[in-house]
Image (cartoon, rainbow, N blue to C red; front, side, top):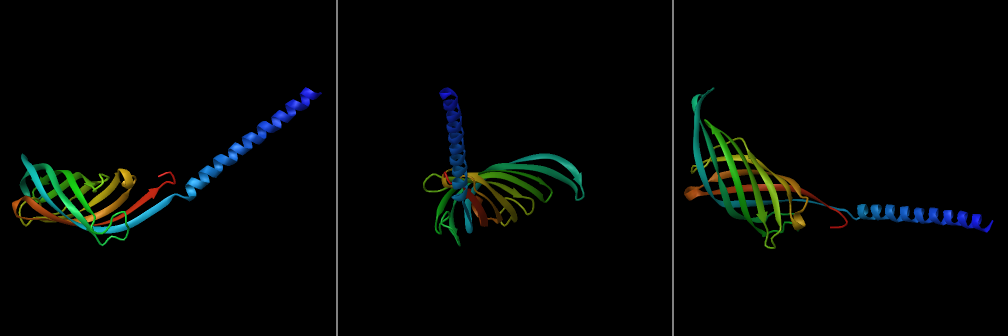
Length: 194
């Protein structure tokens, strides 16, 4: 009889232990969820950059505009930005970033299709990344301009997981320089473990 009672007692202890582990696990989940932080904000900057492009002339095609030549242009932008009108310390006012990008452009007649990847590097080495899209405007020559959209796609360190949208305008200047006024709105969900 003693062994039977002992087995029943052990079963109760096992169930109690399992229940305690379940409570601890659920509490940990709720605690980490409760302390998860969502940051959001907006800021502006003007990207001053030097660009270097290579142009390849493709075949001539017939379009609505008549005979036009396909042009493929690829290259890099290097420069920097200084943040202003920021409403969140993740991007402090007067914060500086080095900027590097790779851009590819297809041009048929006056229509451009620009795609690229860009990274912004802060003074501590943390980065945020984006993709560039522009389907309107002109390209490269002094006085050329257009507008597009940049999508923030993540980053490293304190920018890990950032997402956002950044409409921009581009103005090409003499000597291979361009100015790109940009306004970004972003969101960053940080887990309780970050």
